[in-house]
Length: 197
View 1 (cartoon, helix red, strand yellow):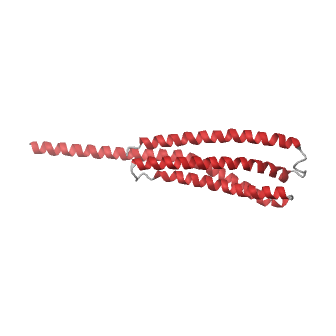
View 2 (cartoon, helix red, strand yellow):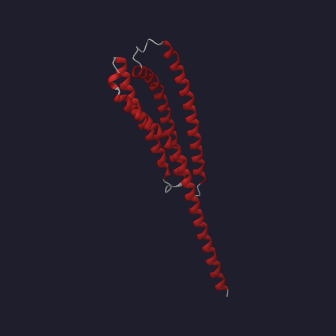
View 3 (cartoon, helix red, strand yellow):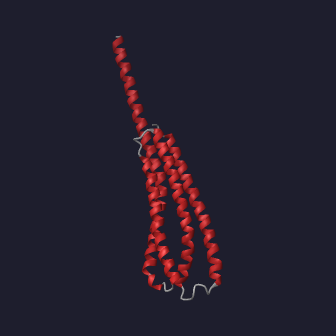
């Protein structure tokens, strides 16, 4: 009789452990999916920005014959190089960040890798923002050369308005993007910390 009770208790505890482990695995899979969805927001934004950069580079290359002065030619070459470099940096940084999704590693290693990749991502984003300010000046020069038949130095109002307005827009936009990415990264980190590993 006692042996039957012991067997029954053993079977009940075994089924409870299996039930708990399946719930744990299910919860872990949901958390992993949430984590990947969070990072996908950043990746999607960077892909859209990369497409815009590549389309702009192709437009400038297609209209390269309109650039008739050495200043405009130099600005055209520099803008194409920057418009190709910015997407490469962005896509590389997001690719590195998505490598953190290897949950087969120990929990502490996963958090450490995430912290390192987060720092690298933020550094690469700062480089992108700095290059964007340089690209802004070059694009202001190019726009006047591509869409105007006049000498670029003849319209002082163009320069007085375009540079300050461009910098103000880029300043606020880059701060908004930085805050948005910081929020997404923070939420992703919290999800990682909640993973039942």
